Amino acid sequence: MEMIQIIGLGFVVTLLILVVRQQRPELAVQLSLTLAIMIFLLVLSKIQAVLDLFRDLADKANISQMYLNTILKIIGIAYITEFGSQVCKDAGEGAVASKIEFAGKIMVMIMAIPIIALVLDTIVRLIP
Image (cartoon, rainbow, N blue to C red; front, side, top):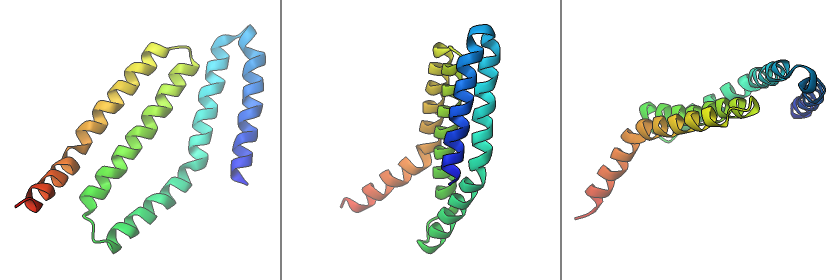
Protein backbone atom coordinates (compact mmCIF):
# COMPACT_ATOMS: atom_id res chain seq x y z
CA MET A 1 0.00 0.00 0.00
CA GLU A 2 2.85 2.37 0.75
CA MET A 3 4.24 1.77 -2.72
CA ILE A 4 0.97 2.96 -4.23
CA GLN A 5 1.25 6.15 -2.17
CA ILE A 6 4.82 6.69 -3.33
CA ILE A 7 3.86 6.13 -6.97
CA GLY A 8 0.87 8.46 -6.59
CA LEU A 9 3.08 11.13 -5.05
CA GLY A 10 5.53 10.64 -7.92
CA PHE A 11 2.80 11.07 -10.52
CA VAL A 12 1.46 14.23 -8.87
CA VAL A 13 4.91 15.80 -8.60
CA THR A 14 5.73 14.77 -12.17
CA LEU A 15 2.62 16.54 -13.43
CA LEU A 16 3.50 19.61 -11.37
CA ILE A 17 7.02 19.58 -12.78
CA LEU A 18 5.71 19.35 -16.35
CA VAL A 19 3.45 22.37 -15.77
CA VAL A 20 6.01 24.43 -13.84
CA ARG A 21 9.06 23.65 -16.01
CA GLN A 22 7.90 25.87 -18.86
CA GLN A 23 7.52 28.95 -16.66
CA ARG A 24 10.09 28.40 -13.89
CA PRO A 25 12.61 25.65 -14.64
CA GLU A 26 14.53 26.26 -11.38
CA LEU A 27 11.38 25.43 -9.41
CA ALA A 28 11.01 22.16 -11.34
CA VAL A 29 14.43 21.03 -10.10
CA GLN A 30 13.50 21.93 -6.53
CA LEU A 31 10.25 19.97 -6.80
CA SER A 32 12.15 16.95 -8.09
CA LEU A 33 14.68 17.17 -5.27
CA THR A 34 11.92 17.56 -2.69
CA LEU A 35 10.18 14.45 -4.02
CA ALA A 36 13.43 12.48 -3.87
CA ILE A 37 13.96 13.48 -0.24
CA MET A 38 10.35 12.67 0.68
CA ILE A 39 10.58 9.21 -0.88
CA PHE A 40 13.90 8.59 0.87
CA LEU A 41 12.34 9.53 4.23
CA LEU A 42 9.33 7.30 3.57
CA VAL A 43 11.49 4.22 2.97
CA LEU A 44 14.02 4.96 5.71
CA SER A 45 12.15 2.87 8.29
CA LYS A 46 12.05 -0.04 5.85
CA ILE A 47 15.80 0.21 5.38
CA GLN A 48 16.29 -0.10 9.14
CA ALA A 49 14.20 -3.28 9.18
CA VAL A 50 16.34 -4.79 6.41
CA LEU A 51 19.55 -3.86 8.25
CA ASP A 52 18.27 -5.51 11.42
CA LEU A 53 17.43 -8.66 9.45
CA PHE A 54 20.91 -8.76 7.89
CA ARG A 55 22.52 -8.39 11.31
CA ASP A 56 20.41 -11.23 12.73
CA LEU A 57 21.29 -13.49 9.79
CA ALA A 58 24.99 -12.64 10.12
CA ASP A 59 24.89 -13.53 13.82
CA LYS A 60 23.22 -16.86 13.07
CA ALA A 61 25.71 -17.62 10.28
CA ASN A 62 28.62 -16.62 12.52
CA ILE A 63 29.83 -13.95 10.07
CA SER A 64 32.05 -11.21 11.42
CA GLN A 65 30.25 -7.90 11.92
CA MET A 66 33.18 -6.17 10.21
CA TYR A 67 32.41 -7.91 6.92
CA LEU A 68 28.68 -7.38 7.26
CA ASN A 69 29.20 -3.69 7.97
CA THR A 70 31.49 -3.42 4.97
CA ILE A 71 28.93 -5.03 2.69
CA LEU A 72 26.17 -2.79 4.05
CA LYS A 73 28.37 0.28 3.51
CA ILE A 74 29.01 -0.81 -0.07
CA ILE A 75 25.28 -1.21 -0.67
CA GLY A 76 24.67 2.18 0.92
CA ILE A 77 27.30 3.84 -1.25
CA ALA A 78 25.75 2.28 -4.36
CA TYR A 79 22.24 3.51 -3.48
CA ILE A 80 23.35 7.00 -2.45
CA THR A 81 25.50 7.31 -5.56
CA GLU A 82 22.57 6.34 -7.76
CA PHE A 83 20.31 8.76 -5.89
CA GLY A 84 22.75 11.66 -6.28
CA SER A 85 23.42 10.84 -9.90
CA GLN A 86 19.72 10.75 -10.76
CA VAL A 87 19.11 14.10 -9.05
CA CYS A 88 21.90 15.63 -11.12
CA LYS A 89 20.52 14.07 -14.30
CA ASP A 90 17.07 15.46 -13.47
CA ALA A 91 18.68 18.90 -13.15
CA GLY A 92 20.21 18.47 -16.60
CA GLU A 93 23.76 17.99 -15.31
CA GLY A 94 24.75 14.71 -16.92
CA ALA A 95 28.47 15.48 -16.62
CA VAL A 96 28.20 15.97 -12.86
CA ALA A 97 26.12 12.78 -12.62
CA SER A 98 28.86 10.84 -14.42
CA LYS A 99 31.49 12.12 -11.99
CA ILE A 100 29.33 11.12 -9.01
CA GLU A 101 28.93 7.64 -10.49
CA PHE A 102 32.70 7.39 -11.04
CA ALA A 103 33.43 8.45 -7.46
CA GLY A 104 30.87 5.92 -6.18
CA LYS A 105 32.54 3.11 -8.12
CA ILE A 106 35.94 4.03 -6.72
CA MET A 107 34.55 4.15 -3.17
CA VAL A 108 32.93 0.73 -3.61
CA MET A 109 36.22 -0.68 -4.87
CA ILE A 110 38.08 0.76 -1.88
CA MET A 111 35.50 -0.55 0.59
CA ALA A 112 35.64 -4.02 -0.99
CA ILE A 113 39.39 -4.46 -0.43
CA PRO A 114 39.05 -6.30 2.93
CA ILE A 115 36.49 -8.71 1.47
CA ILE A 116 38.59 -9.34 -1.63
CA ALA A 117 41.63 -9.96 0.58
CA LEU A 118 39.64 -12.47 2.67
CA VAL A 119 38.47 -14.33 -0.45
CA LEU A 120 41.99 -14.45 -1.88
CA ASP A 121 43.38 -15.64 1.47
CA THR A 122 40.76 -18.40 1.60
CA ILE A 123 41.61 -19.49 -1.95
CA VAL A 124 45.33 -19.57 -1.19
CA ARG A 125 44.72 -21.74 1.89
CA LEU A 126 42.63 -24.17 -0.15
CA ILE A 127 45.33 -24.66 -2.76
CA PRO A 128 47.95 -27.21 -1.58
